[in-house]
Image (cartoon, rainbow, N blue to C red; front, side, top):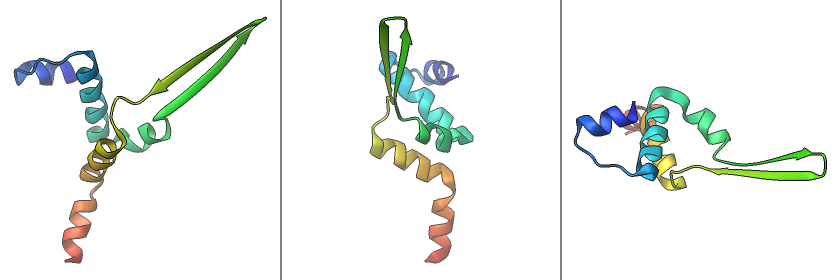
Length: 83
């Protein structure tokens, strides 16, 4: 879906940019709290004497992730009512 949005708007995204768009779209669709729990993961698995380590790090920087989550969480409406 992120690729469709990018191609319709004429954006040329590399692989990293496409990953960022996918994560922003997931935040917009309400999966921000789920993504926040797994921004950085390290997984270990062993098979006999072999041990493998897999790491994952979110393509979005923490400030950008937090800002996108703030925009979609409804905090803006709450803050405007407080003024």
